Length: 175
Image (cartoon, rainbow, N blue to C red; front, side, top):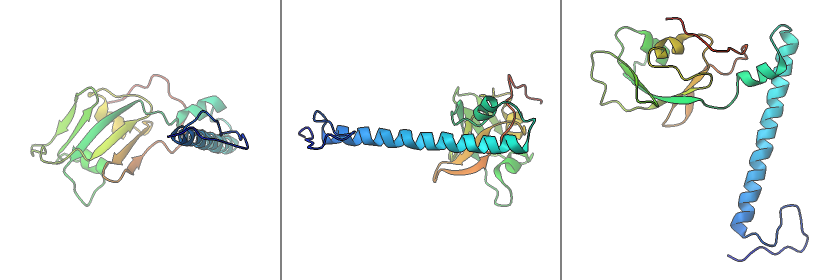
């Protein structure tokens, strides 16, 4: 495709860009504007929280608490029971589930063979990547920051990142 020609020399118009390059440049600029809008919204949320919770901590610490960076992931499959949510199913001694970390290690529970069930959920870790020994405790720790996403429609089934919490240094899980 030919490079774009411009008679008005606007901010985005560049005679050396193809139409695809121009569209990509505009798309990147729009993404940056959305990130800035999101950061500004987050700042406002944290400032409101600080005003209502004066001893909650420093602004920079609270801004980092619910960052959007995923530190690790895991896959989850379990025998679904319509009468309970995912965490209730995992906690039930009669449940059957398997959680596999990115390292390939994980935990499995239940006598029933669940290999026929798909890994239809994903767990996104936002604070730490728990080891397989910490994984079960991590999911039930009120200070853990993770989301469980249903992969078929990207629905957030569980989101523990929405609350502003004090920053936790090297977190130790209690078993």
